Image 1 (cartoon, rainbow, N blue to C red):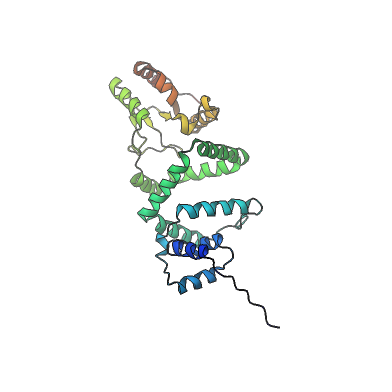
Image 2: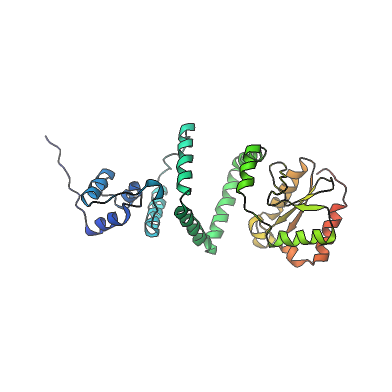
Length: 287
């Protein structure tokens, strides 16, 4: 007995969706929006309509499509495991993924789209706070992952090849807080020099200190922004962040002075200078 063929007719809305997105969007994404039609059906319909696909590495997802895809994925993964859960990419697969990502981000339009999307998302305080809470919860539940990532980061920063690439790519300049500290150091004549932009090429235990002692003492200064490192005002793990940094430097025999944003803003230049001078005159001690 012959199998009965089904005829999934196309609505005007579906045809318009295909016309608007076929040239610039991955077909698998369109298939998520139009689940009644298979990928092969989408291609056949597009061919009949005379639609062409652009360079696959220059495709962009329109904002409306991104929202629909995001909701579909959220609904799906509420009841399903990720398809790649428990699996690992082969070395060949990792290489292909890396090359594909490099080609994608080589497109200025894609980079701008990604940047604008992230800026728009994190401009919402609720999204920003939700992201912070998720990351803190993840690190709290997976301390072993945090240790592995930390070790990998230290190994990378001890690799001369990586450091050369990092130095060539980095665009960091002294921010307002760092510049103020740098001006105080120069005006008073304290033995520290700015290294936050890696200009001195100093890496210690996988970390790039903001300021390094230049008279031979094993001393560094780190400037902590309240938002990125957390502080008492937002009930984050500010004490842990400071303690971890000091311990990591102490592990290789360096003393570290942490200057927090809220302290810097509440102190005069004279008081800050005295604090740094006092630290400079301290005798190195074990932590």
